[in-house]
Amino acid sequence: MKAKIAVIRGDGIGPEITDAALTALGAIATKFSHEFVYSFPLLGGEAVDNTGVPLPQETVDVCKKSDAVLLGAVGGPKWDSLAGHLRPEKGLLGIRSALGLYANVRPAFLYGALKNSSPLRPDIVKNGIDLVVVRELTGGIYFGERGQKRTEKGLTAYDTEIYSVHEIERIAKIAFEIAQKRRKKVTSVDKANVLESGRLWRGTVNHVAAAYPDVKLDHMLVDNCAMQIIRDPSQFDVMLCPNMFGDILSDEAAMAAGSIGMLPSSSLGTGTLGLYEPIHGSAPDIAGTDTANPIATVLAAGMMLSTSLGLYRETEILQLAVENVLDAGYRTADIYTPSTKKVSCSKMAELIALQILQL
Ligand code: IPM
Ligand code: MG
Image 1: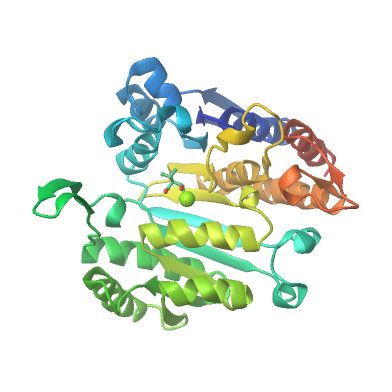
Image 2 (image 1 turned 90 degrees about the horizontal axis):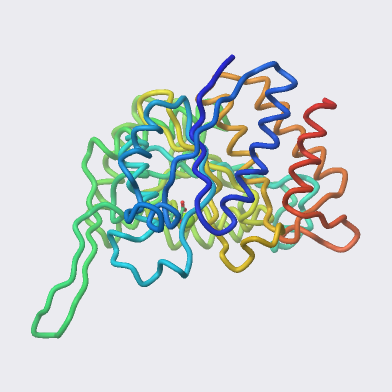
């Protein structure tokens, strides 16, 4: 098949990890005789430097005309002092919103070969980790009203957590549908003991659950959930989270699964167009050193193949290639443990590509 893919390299390690993903995709294209046509629209800090804004309209247009969007990471200290609406992160939030990508799917899986890379004790991870964070992505406190006000207390700032029933319903449905294809358990995360929005969240999720009698639903307060991920991550199947809680808990789940460098994500809306990115940031401290872990981005490209392009066998081969390379003992610095073989970002990509061709 021929597919148009918008590749947003971004800032920091963004270019290195997207190049790695393109190496893996190149091997998939060769093996299965596909043609992937790439465009490279700007977003984030790079867009600020070149166009003055973090999300140029042209980038939105190019993405909308593509079959899928693959993104590295955005942001860095260079742009930290800019006003909120000019920050690179605003570009990322803007593209998610402009493409209507309200459902963010973040699978955290502990590979057998990485059991020693998890900071959790062996007896805690003995049952493995295989969970999916389903994060609401275009609402909540990320998009509610915010600002600064002078009051009698001096300067104050506020951000608003706001959810509509419609927003909660549509993300809850995604979580239940994913659970139906897995172990049929949804844990809905909220702070209903304090937040009004949390109570609306809980009530609405209960209502949606009635249509999925085969799925078991639990509710968990977010503080307890953060603790339970450390106590026994194997208890989770699908975690349904508001935007900010999903952001926080997916980093925690990623680390439990060995490294934040391992977790891919897909962001989806009502159509087949999706945005695929690692859950981690731009790691400016190691940018340009060829030491980043490209696996999250490679796996994100893998999610893209099946979810946006309908190429299921290709996704399987890519995932198997990653697993085989890990089983063969190759590690980037973040997942390195004594007696394994440390490789660079680009070398890891080459090994995965070679493995794809050999499978
Ligand atoms: C993520 C990131 C982003 C988010 C930042 C960079 C805006 O942390 O994708 O998890 O908070 O959504
Ligand atoms: Mg995050």
